[in-house]
Length: 431
Image (cartoon, rainbow, N blue to C red; front, side):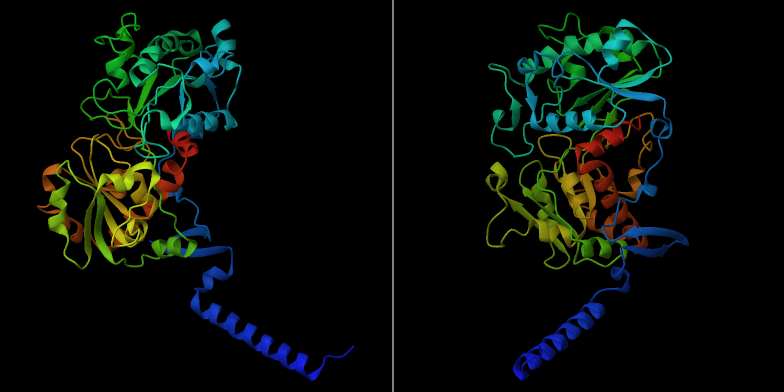
């Protein structure tokens, strides 16, 4: 059959339009986007990047655990892995992390019981508790109350009674032959609190007033096999082998592939510094930094962050847009030593400016601060007294090439370690 003149004319017009669209797309996007793999030469090193821009692991050190193949990941058999699991509270964040443990290819579901009954010095384990020690009240929904972010709730239990209950199980695990048979085995505990009565070392330690701790850990706090990963602890208060843990992002910022590409290509951003958050805790002093041009600071009412709401007001939901367009963004402490904003900033490919004296950063320890990442390459740490005095001067003094590498490092840390509980586990296994 043949086309009618009208159909033929429409076909030619459609074909011409398609050709114009293809030419426009070809000119609009860099040639690298025409292939899944792109090549980027930086500092005379050749890096292969995919369109989705996978994490740049070269920023992070290779760990002993990651490079060896002689350890098993195990969980205790006291709570969630037993028939009595419904009697143990569990928060939604803990569900995510525990699921990551169970899904790991090195997880051995029967190893803990086997090694308790038959200790084997040749088997090295990285052990995690199957009870909750991470009392996270604001994830995934910020501020609605204690019960909202629970997965399993036990009537009458609150955060302090949960940790009290955990103490005796932690003590049992730390003394178990499943752990002690091999001196290189580790028991890793998560502590998502901040301050007295939230930190495991205060609730379960030898000086605790806990009703159920039976004398606390005693000298177990001096046990190098027990590692505690803290959201918020001062470096001076942590034991040498304790480590930091990145708080989860309540409102992570989604970057599109072209925005990730711009970060790799060191594209300049509109704002050298921004901060958006509630007031208090001396944060109002940041308002003096706003210059109406390349420094953006807004203090919001706390109600705008509660219950998962996005900030609303005269400027419609600017939080993500401003963050994406910021080279640096403020992460001042609030109620705690740390801020959820820390991870949110990294998710946007910006560089966190941390105002918190002596906070132990994620996956750093007092004895080995650069075990996973050298934080001077990923973030800026200022004492709280420098809120308004020298912040912008300090940031402007950072050379463009250094700032570019810091943005890459920040986004790479988000992708690798902070964007999911799989990332948490990856970072913890480096210890």
